[in-house]
Length: 370
Image (tube, rainbow, N blue to C red; front, side, top):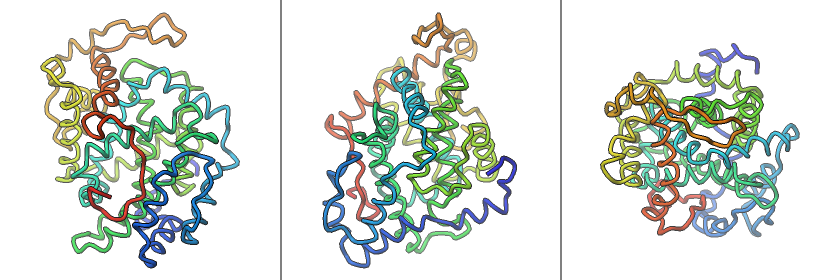
């Protein structure tokens, strides 16, 4: 869809639109009363190319078959180039996700409401943050979208998680229809762009100004993932500049302060304090978030003031990332970002899952144990 056509009217319609394929599969599971059985069957179904488990409900089997093949326009060379950025900047990518992408999403008040109403995403918020970080790594890992990767299967399960949320939240008495359909297409597109647009922007804020070719390849990877996640093709543009315009338009429409967004952002800050213990990094969370998303967006979710002086941030330090240049001038805050990204998987898994990696699972309901 050409830039400039994402009008309020069009995006308003998208707020009332879900995902027909995912919703049909989840509805059938609950109609048959097979939610626990299906969850157990799919628990170990985590790599691309693995045969479908036998005995799945018909609509769920159709769903997996239809979404197991990448779209014809998916470019293997672009996917490989885009995913290779993880090997260079994994720690900074993960930190930008936690301190840039997610706080911007939580600052969209209507979308944050559905997250707050899912006990799975609030009571188990540390697990949710680790799962989301693991998803990014699964997609961008070597062969993540290939025959033996995990990225495609993770995306398929996340799409079913979204459908499960719509199924349950719309049946709760406190859902305000003015917020739109839970996990609607506008919110899905905004979340997708928070990966494909915000992460390259965040890397630039941390001193890594990607060449256009790498930035566009990274965007292409997430466009492919958006297709698997069921994002409407009109909200999944092929070019980075169009995606940036769409994301900025959604922010303009949706940014507002909310109790839900404030609570979700506080959970990120608490998580950062857990994985980066000690006085040296005491202010890392607020500093990173404000550096990456700006004071106005940070104020919406009540991020405390940064405690590193602006002068120190701007002074910078030369760090060699081995990116074909002598070095990149990186603000001091990028050092904290690098430490955070490394600590997420080292300390985060230990704190939240006894050192084991997370596997996305199809939930049976909106509970912490789902």
